[in-house]
Image: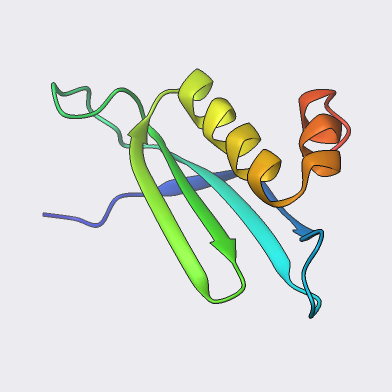
Length: 91
């Protein structure tokens, strides 16, 4: 079985608000190019969310769910940046 092939859709980092030390929150959204629909996955998108050294990855997302996850992540760590992302100012 071959390794999946990905295209990077979005990648950016923002400073987390309200922390003692400067901390970055990073978002990386990728689309699997050789995705085949299945009952286990909603879509071809993979999302990596990182704050400091903590990283969460989510796989099998559709475009709408990926955007919603990014917005929720930013709201939790940087509400001002969440609004900028929602308005299309960050991508």
